Length: 331
Ligand SMILES: NC(=O)c1ccc[n+]([C@@H]2O[C@H](COP(=O)([O-])OP(=O)(O)OC[C@H]3O[C@@H](n4cnc5c(N)ncnc54)[C@H](OP(=O)(O)O)[C@@H]3O)[C@@H](O)[C@H]2O)c1
Image (spheres, rainbow, N blue to C red):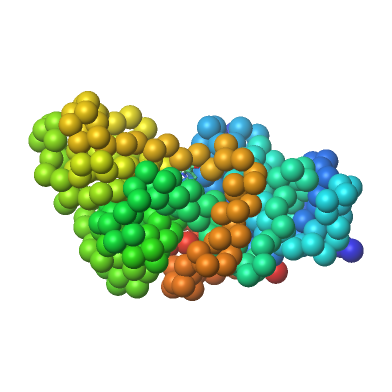
């Protein structure tokens, strides 16, 4: 086998600026690990964009290949659980942050990070879902645990054209919810309708600067990816007994809050962290996503890009031009 492969490499210059391009690397230079995987598809995530920009909260050592998600086949394994040819994925681990990630044709990782692709999910579909699909599924499951009437409920989703947001819209719509998709993108109407949104709102139609402790109740549940002013407004617009699944900080980490939504309306905040969920629960969720829980609109919510075109696409993603998921073809 040729030991050379193609990968997107982020480099840090002497003036501390960052650039990225596709380069040829050697498998022999990958860090030690139990399982060598030939990556077929990866998915572009929020953390990957931060890594490409040199954000030290994600990646400290450069040159670096981002890509927190990857799916493909095992090539070599020193661990008894995996053999060459096994179809596998790596989702939401340190890969792509402190170790070379899925924007390269090969990754070498600890066996504990590797999950077999469940029946019903090929490498491409696994990467359309990826970390955002898992996050959205965990958020919906958390809401369903505290809201027995989630089916048919009116639910708000912020960041609706992003990875977590669009998959939350799709999963909630598939359960029968009436989904209000909140987006900062004026051109998102057709996309969001196609994946199941019942109503499309701009961020300005939800965020509230009045400072009022309670706002007219609008939703029974919400999936928030934004934090900041969006989360503050969603909490104050929940109905009695409503719940907000908090998944991200795409807008801001801090948010204003007061106790009244909690003590007068019994609102619940549910924190979601994909990295701390026990492995058996994750495996059950993937089986569900590969089977009865697989969103019918997966084809409508992603586009595929060749590795050679990824540098240009990353710029467009970071400029907010892209709707839905971007999957990288590393064939
Ligand atoms: N908890 C976890 O385990 C977990 C897992 C994965 C991701 N996350 C976090 O979830 C968040 C979203 O991840 P993602 O993969 O969906 O990212 P993404 O694909 O980049 O989407 C983020 C979306 O947020 C919206 N947005 C951006 N800036 C905003 C602002 N200032 N105010 C309100 N909305 C804003 C945009 O959607 P619109 O233009 O449509 O509004 C954007 O497309 C990130 O903070 C990420 O770190 C958490």
